[in-house]
Image (tube, rainbow, N blue to C red; front, side):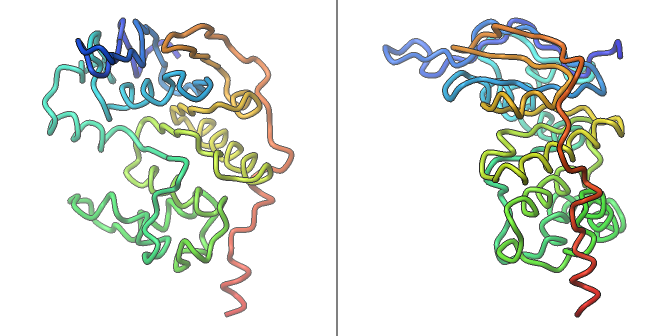
Length: 250
């Protein structure tokens, strides 16, 4: 891997700039993420890690500095163009799942495709759900799914546009230990398939699933190290029920 998919050059994010209550959430950060890397950004609450993810993922702009995404300086683009590139190249997973409660798993995954011109959106959504081990849960509503299953629906939704990069902000924050390990095993599998994965977490054991760990404190990168022996889940995805058994009983 020698081609950066993300290059950040001296980015800072200051809220209330010029006011007495000015807050610098990210301070003069420079880093590169290569295509196909699995990276965790680790830090305590308030460290600036989520703000950094939002800037790298084109959800926000830096106050200063530049972000180059796959060769394009996105920090200089207008809102519509930035949104277009973000929707095409990036998938997002969040701590709270952000699923529509009265919408099936399949329909939740279809949402990013509704306003696209891609044919066969139902087929693409079913394929994404199968990728995350939920082939038999397509008609289930979020309230009928466990927390780990809801997060896998959210990951399927992030995958359905076939993005180059997946950003996940505290994806295990609302899950029990077993479900957390299953979700990280899923991210490892997606990485092995060639995806670029960036996970934001405050948990050191979750960070150890990645091959590179960036630690941030007070808005600055304080450590950036390779992890030659990433942690692996005690149970692989092959042991996670797909839900097919339940469907067969109906």
